[in-house]
Amino acid sequence: MVTRVHFCQKCGRPIKRAGYCEDCASELNVGIKNRCSFCGKSNLMSPLAYNIKTKHVYCKTCLDLFVKGLRSNHFTEHEIKKIIDKDFIPVK
Image (cartoon, rainbow, N blue to C red; front, side, top):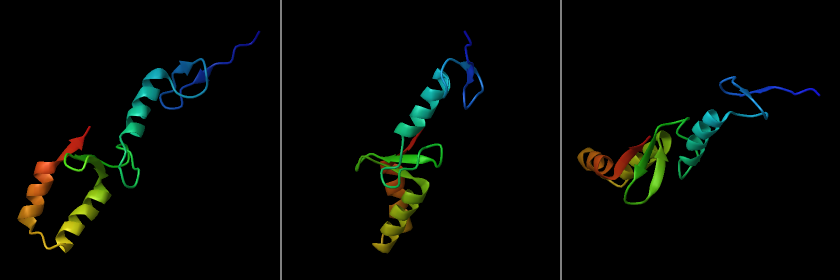
């Protein structure tokens, strides 16, 4: 009887089935759950920020678009900074 040895695709640790070891799988699942609400980027691709008021997660690109929208609605830079500091928290 021949037993085939598989290796984790991320860290190279020997495992029973093809794919990822338990540690790497849990690390990857965290990245999958934390995604931008608009474009779907994970926190592995871009830093994320959570808006407390709207309950949405923004990646760097979508947050820049949000700020650009505020500027087009004639918000001052002081007001925009206040909104960003008050309503957004970084996702870790």
